[in-house]
Structure formats: C-alpha cells, structure tokens
Amino acid sequence: EIVFAPMEESHNEPEVAVTKEEEEEVDDDVDDEPLEPQKKIDISSLNKKATNHVEDEEFTFHYYVFSLIFMLGFMVHSRRDGEMDLFVSGALILAYVALKQQVLESSYVFLAFLGYCLYSTIENSPYNANHHNMCGIVSVLLIPQQIRRCLHYSNRINSNNNSDSNIETAQPTGTAEALNSVRIAIIIMYFMAGFHKINTDFLNPEVSCAYDKIWKYFELVGYESDHDMDSLPWILKTLPHQVLFVEMVPPILLCFARFQRPSLFVLISLHTILLPFGFADFGTIAQSFLWLFVHPHAVKESGLPRHFFTDMALVFCFFEAASMLVWYQTEDMNDPPFASAEVTVVLMAFALMWASIFRTKNEPAQPVHLPKSKYGASVLLFFLWFSFNPYFGLRTVGCLTMFSNLTTEGPTSNHLLLGSNPLKIFDYQEDTVEMVEIDPRLPNREDGDVIPRVHFDLYLHRMKEEYGDKEMYLWIEYQNQTYESWDVFHDETFAQFWEPRPWWERKFMLFRTIKQHDGPQECTW
Image: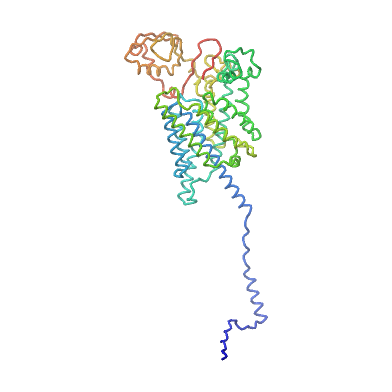
C-alpha cells in the first residue's frame, strides 16, 4: 500500500514585482533618516580611572599602616603612666579585633585616637614629653581631614554604594594636603632639635649630652665614662658635631625626592641606636612619622598584606596589656616587666617594616611643598613659635630642647647664633624664687634651689596637701627681698605667694632646673 505524505504548505510569500519608481522612493526614505554613529569607548579615560583607583587603594593602605604605627607608638609612650597605658592598650586591642572582624571602620578608630591624643596633650600640659607635644601637633593637623573621611564613608554607606565592603575609598586630595603639613612639622621637629644644640656646652665633650647615653656603647670597646676625652679617637671626639649633622641636614634633605632614601636611612639608624636606652616610645612614634615619607606604591610593592600589620599591632597590644597587668600585680611601679622584651619587639617591627620597604625598586618619594591650607599654615607657624619659646623668654622644657645643654636664662645664652638673646621679650625665666634654706622634711628641693615664680604657688599647695598639719621652715629670697617663716603654711608673710597665677601661665609654662653657677651647663633632660 502506498501512502502519500501530505505536502507542506509553503511559508514563502510570493515575489512581488517592484517598479523602478518605487525602488527609488524607498532609497529616498532611507537617505532621509541616517543611522546614528555608535559612540566610541574612551580607552584613555578608562585607563585613567583604573589608575586613579589603584592609587587610591595604595594611598588608603599606606595611610592605614601609618595610623597603626602612630597609635602603637603612643601606647608605648603611655607606659610612663601605668593607668593610661593600660587604658590605651586595652582600647587598641578592642579596636584592632573589631577591625579584623570588620565591625568597625578604621577611619572612626583613628579619629577617636586623634581626639584622645589631643585631649591627653592638653590635660597633661605642661608636663608632656617633647614627643607627646609633637603628637598633639600632628593630631591638630589631621583631625579636620579625618572628620571629612568619616563623613565621606558614612555617606557612601548610607547611599548603598559598595555597601558590601568595609574598606573606605581614600580621599587623597584632602588627606594628602594634611599629610604634607605633617611632613613639614616633622622636618621642623628634627631641625629645631638640632638647632637648640648649636651651643658652646653641647659642643664641649666634657659636659655634652651627646655622650650621655652613648657611653654604654663605648664601654663595649673599652672606653669607660670617666675616660680621658683627649685620648679618644677623633670619630668619638667629634660626636657632638655628628649629632648636629644628623639632626639638621637629613631633615632638610627630606624635602627633596632624590635624597629621601639616604636621609631615611640616617634617621632610622639614629633611632635604632637610641632605642635600647629607654627611647622605645619616641623611636616608635618617630618611625610612624618617617613612614609618611615612603611612597604608597613602595608599600604596595613590599607584598605585605593589610592583615599582617593589623596582626602585628594586635600582638604588640596584648603584650603591652599583659606587661601592665603584671606591673600592677607585683606593685613594682619602678621596674615594669618585659622592658627589654618590649625593645626587642619594637626592633623587630623596625626590621620587618623597613626591610620590606627598602627592598622595593621604587624610591621613597613624597614631595613636600608649602601648605596650601591656611589652617595647616597657621598650625605650623604656631609649632615653629612654640619651638623658639626659650629664646623668647618663655618655657624651656617640652619645646624640642631635650638633651641640648641649652641655657637662655639671664641677659645672655650659650647659643652660638643667639648668644645675646636678641629675641627675648618676656622675663619669666628671670622671675624666680631662690630657696635659701628649706625644711629638710620637704622633698624634691634643696637649699639654694631656684623655682620660677609661675610655679612656686603650685609647689606650696602641693606641700601643704601632704604636710599641712605640720610646722615647716622656709627661707626664700624674691626680688631682692627676704621672706622667712617657721610655719610657712599659715604665716601671713607668705600670703602673696599663695595666690595662684593665671591658669594659662600654669598650663603653658614649664622650666628646667635653673643653673646657679658660672660653669658649663650640665646635661639635663
């Protein structure tokens, strides 16, 4: 049986003849509506955006590491006050754990730290160490831009842009300008520390502070601290001049990109040498400052990830907190435990970090220029004025005069460039009280000591708090007049000295022990 399959229907439409006139009409319609050309992709613009994104990431990473080291350095400095150190180390542990768990944003943590750093600088004034005052200056320079970073991050989260990431987008423009001002402040810090040492007594090997700590190294090669200076090798005799060179020349060279690498080497070597002698706090803080002269790209090339620095900081904080807890338990507040181990940890941090940076091919190069911000320029001018305080007749401690042998009291100073005190316009250094004879039960003072009038009332109030129920003898001379009493806490003879001076004087002024002889100025902190 033959079965025929049904034929499929043709879906092809029959051809229709088109006349020549209709074909020309169609062509005319096409010509009347030309096709829009496709937009060309701007490759250069995309490359620029990609480059900016990479630079932003590098900048953010660099800034993050700086904030970590800065906070660690301040924590080591806080060891001077056990309670403050325990608080700072505990707070940083919580902050770093929160950072690792992405509970907190690093911008908020660093802003809180800068606020606390500035608060502690003001609260503890005028008794801050030189590097504590420097931390306060850096905090003042960075707080405004750090607030903007936090607001920027908050706005980005609220707008749901990249909300799945807890790492902020860097703002190089505002932050870079603030960091430029910080770099200038760092250069001023080093240079002024050297400038104060241009005096006859620092250059005198018999009393120079240049030999104060370094003798511990000399003993390793057979030279004792009482060794005859004339028999020392020339390289040791010229140590004060070498210190002047290190503290004044490399900081200036930090302004120039091609000289930044050797300058960093010199300054890092200086802090490494001083580190074992109790300068772990200043060394760590200075390390964070010098980090700002390393280019962000060099940090990225080192290959060290973000969590490496966070873990290192976290371990160090646990170590410091444990040290403080043991310190409290043993109640030996004069000998904190793990001090030598702490120096070792800081040295390890130095080695790991700087070796990774100087292995990179890119030279550290962070350009330094005059500040564009009026705010930054104002803070830097204040810092420069503060550094010149001794020559104006104001405070002599805490303004980068540490271990300088500098003396500016009286009509002349021992400074080689400002020996006639041409800048002195205040008389606080000469307004003094001489303690001719003092009750032997009163501590911290001896017969013949001289106290600036600004702080004499504070000294009396402190003594009254401790010995107010006892009769104490005191004989002083002030402005060519003699004051003497067997009951200094209740005698009306001393009534004028009990009146407190203006708060701003007591909060700002601080003076080192005033020399009472015509010989050279001995080395003092």
